[in-house]
Length: 210
Image 1: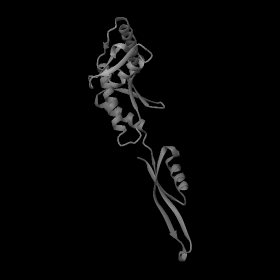
Image 2: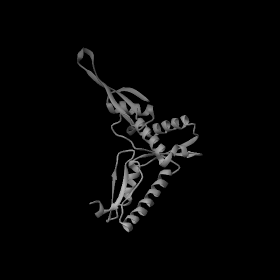
Image 3: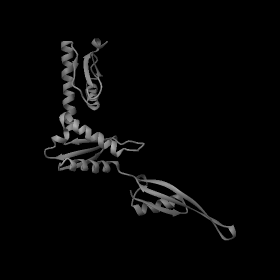
Image 4: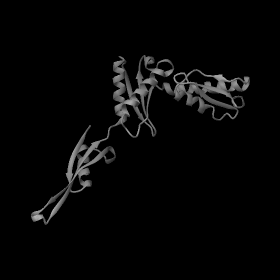
């Protein structure tokens, strides 16, 4: 990790010198005060003060995630490109290439496992966690659209037949999509049962659950 140590009369001057050398902005660095120095002058009558600081470039979690993902792809003998997109609440890594089904896995389970591994790796020992989303050529959006349509279809079936529908086990993210898709249905309730990895969503008439 790039850093420099600078000594100057004031903290501000030391930081400014360090930023020039690192070619960085203040919001891109962490500053640590190493020492405050007081030097006595002739016969102790005069003294001068200086401060020593260590200025370190903050780790770019998004770039670290890209490097980690590329290492995973190499170990899986997969040739692909990784593009990084930043949003207000997350960083998205989108994978492009040929024959990428093995990365997605059955119903996205392999992709979810890779995403969890990357989040654990790049957020280790960090107080503020950065959310990393790993996608393959927009698969997650397509999957979300499919789950949304499924939720609507099954909710209409429950209303028509009066019988609850038990969905297959899903990840917590996919369960949230089902719940969110049916929030506007006043006569329908959704809830989850079971333990991971077999936890699933149930769609029922509101009166039937009670």
